[in-house]
Length: 328
Image 1: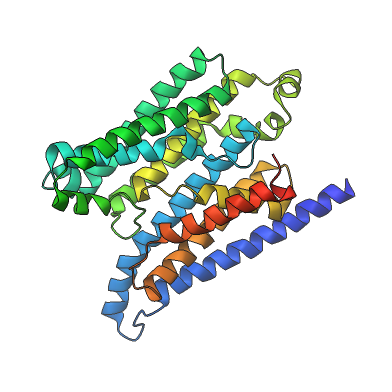
Image 2: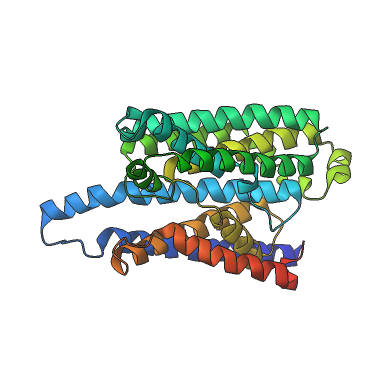
């Protein structure tokens, strides 16, 4: 018990330190190159940057929560919810919208409508497909991952076919929507995303408390009175919806979850998901805000944040595969 209390105290201190670092990063993002001595310009800059900051916070929480839950369900540290195909569905939907309706349509020009269509489509398709597959495969999560990979290839192939016959000008316009973008998110989208995440957290509040038990394995969880299959099914749907919210809000950021989830496990060294999820969310905020600061003030928006995340994620993925710490 004394050792457990010591670990909890250490983790609480680490969370406070991470929170302080996030607050400093937020202040830097809002204030760097912001003319404080000119009140009108200062307010205008804050009005531009605050939605971007909130967007990064929302995405970090959604991706961190989804990745940790997914890894705990699968009991594997080198997988991400991207295997469920949300990124491919997002890219397919945007490509199909431009291919069918063109860049002059409301689906392309209206950010709020595009967000609503993305979120509803990914949520409905993901929920229905994986509900059916989960039932059909006898609640076998490994089959779900395999089918998700096949679906990703399918949607990717259809998207590639549409791109090949698309007008080059429309393809250039489409490319801007297929990478993570934090700069063109309206207040309505942020509000809807917060409401969606709050609803998911409320519905899954009891299941989230069982994650510590579920990581012990199916037999142990059932012996402790957990309705394992139903809990796993609800948590999987929560993962799908969280990824739908994150992807619809900012676009695909595949490797972010892999990075923050595993760093959280390495830093906190605990089985308690309350600490791991909070740590992953804060680490995600640091990664995105720091990356956006570099993109904004060093590269002047010529290099998107997703590029940094992809490079770092690829290197970190290799590290996890090759090191004993990344054993699975």
